[in-house]
Length: 90
Image (cartoon, rainbow, N blue to C red; front, side, top):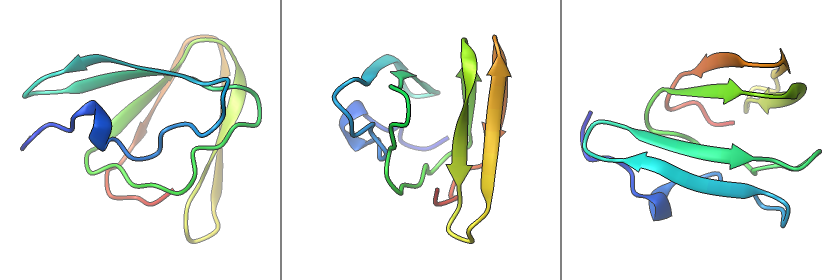
């Protein structure tokens, strides 16, 4: 997997004051980060170097927009997960 990302290297931190971000695991094999976004909050454009999984716990929806203009609306009625491939600017 290469050199793991450290908390200060993660791009796409939530920009609003109501967000919560906490690194739960950060070792040589994986990183697990907890995010809690406020409604209509945005991260800004960013790219993750590795594949990652988004796990949603509550009801709601978020949008994943890519530079080609496509918008993927990811909804959840509780516990759900989605795989996002690394290297995709969104």
